[in-house]
Image (cartoon, rainbow, N blue to C red; front, side, top):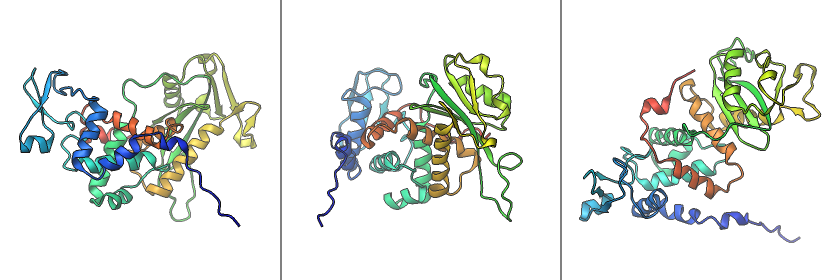
Length: 320
């Protein structure tokens, strides 16, 4: 019997970032050059004043640290300034490897696994992952609202029941999460304090275009949305074991929540309320970039690391 031939995805061979990020993960100078290339594309920009009239400083220490100086404001800077890498004692080579690991893991990567891979402490790995999740989150320039057929649902995320108490959903201490999924498109999620009409409908109106057609279950919170959307509001009755009626279904959003729970239970095991929104940002990023190659996803994440340096309060956010 002949051996089955393994055929590699040809798209992976076309992504030059894979070889570059492998080299950057092994050498600090290569890592700095790699990040400078992706952030500045050969033209350093001062993160303090935005001037492009800069120069690379010379000298052993300056070259080792990758120091630049701005002619305009006279301030020094490196490629770390104004990114999630700023004020981090971890080498850029470790950050490059962390970006790759976070980009290619289909079900996410845990802090323990990243700590073993990078040979760093669990605390440092958790610090890196929280900053990367902060970078994955959509900023004020969030993409256009969802359109076409949009499915809406909510779920409850929390600890496993103890003492034989299998109660689910309302009345438990689990955290409600609402989501809207455009069929064959993007997803938007929101942590909400309680499932009611005000919270759910605010999320739907915020992220769904008025020209869309809304699909949901018989949840009371979705009532009175028909007048807001041109395509109307269509429902399936799960209580009667109805899961699809012609084109009316919520299978896409339920599939998204299924992947979220598999990752939370299988990879992370437990997630605190104050950090749950960052994990949801990670799941959003993975879903919305699912058609990209691992290399292109890593490149996109690397581009999203630029911006204001996050504080712990910004990374932690407000718990629902």
